[in-house]
Image (cartoon, rainbow over all chains, first blue to last red; front, side, top):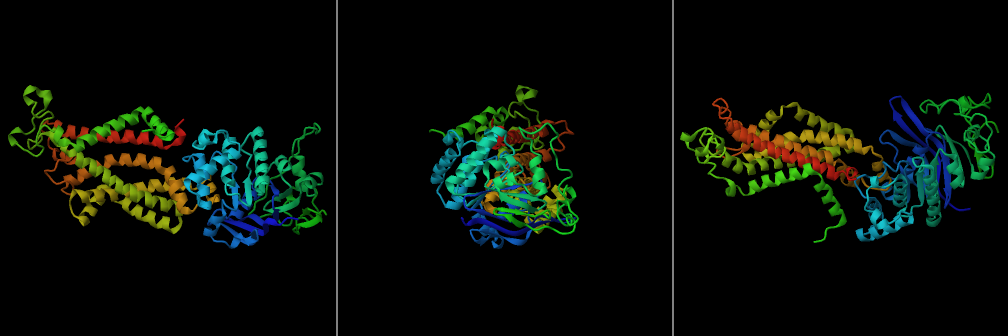
Length: 321
Length: 289
């Protein structure tokens, strides 16, 4: 078994608002092993993105705070690191690819410039060397004619091209961990598959681990080894990818899976989960999913279930078991 | 000399923009006049002849051709005074705006980006400066610095700083929340780097446009200070002082004493504004399709 690259333990990131603390991430624990892709799945507003930002310590400041927990990157706790140390880690050991390739590249800089910037900050490269390396990276992410393209501005490229440029930028320093926050959501379907394949290929090549945040279970099935399902700031089920699709145990996971249209499915109505994500300032007592759960027991609104091992590589937080 | 592809593209975009080219031509002409007034002025700008007060110019007939744009209340050649005044007015406008832009950009960037108590403190100071009518504030500063054209430039620079600071701050507040700034942070860029390399270039368009617009106001304010005896000292030819000095000319029907210095200011201001607009287009890569 390979060592974990990233290990998050009981992470709690709260955000102060006028009404009180939003418990965006409330006791999240997971590990990502070397060269592994973990998919973090959940609805909008369940705390996926905040988990990602917590790893980079880029949650909104000063409102946001890590209240508890630890984030170990290769054994070092990032929670204890200061801003300056984090600047050296960001982009070098942990990189992030954002959802919107339209807005996450600086519009006044040519795309090559962005890649060169990372190389010059973290590797201390000269402009010349960085330029050569940037061309190589753009070629590697399959941008045609990189010598010319690198002088083009983001608005001159298509969405898919921009996302490729973002990936080149993120992987320029061969980071230990790539955090991809819905990297394909803003792209059309054909491009989605290409971008996922690119991330997978580069992950293999650079021995990088990936935290893939998505609400699309199709994306998970395609490119992850492990899946964690998040609901209202907590992880409710965590399993090896085939195991999860074959034996989903948590009612929320099952509901998610049954709300995907299937080609071979019957003619009935597509299922939707009634209700919406609960208010994270005053989350429901007990299991946070119980107000929407079809199989709830009397204990569910009283006692909070904890994450327990139910099988090898399969953990679950539910009273049903 | 071979120009790089990027420079060629930049020049191409600039020269395609007709108004910007027009602005540049106007400004080049004005700067040429400012550099070589003795080549162009038909008369001595300081020579007065009270027997020739308020003489009309070329439109009145051949016999008045000696003073093409007429004479002012002391019988001085208006055209020569406008030509010699170009340098002073241009300098006052540019230096005052330069001071206000440098101060305003620094204050605005830090205030907007860092926020917190620094933002509150700086913006309250700016609010206090805003509370004074601009000319009164300039007079107050002049009272402390003493009279003179150089000091008028400094005073006007300070008067224009709060507006620039507010504009830069508001742009910074918007840019700070952009996703690409977040992305830069995620790549490990330091705050200084984000501020100077990513926020400032993105904020440049409104800064340039606003600065060029301010040059016009600065020239006029310098004129007002001159009128009060705090700016350019008579008999130094300066456009604003020429306007203020001829305030009685209109009563006597000598419209030319007021109109032509006004036209000179207008043409210069127009040149700056057209160029400013062109610069904005040039600086914004999204408009370079």
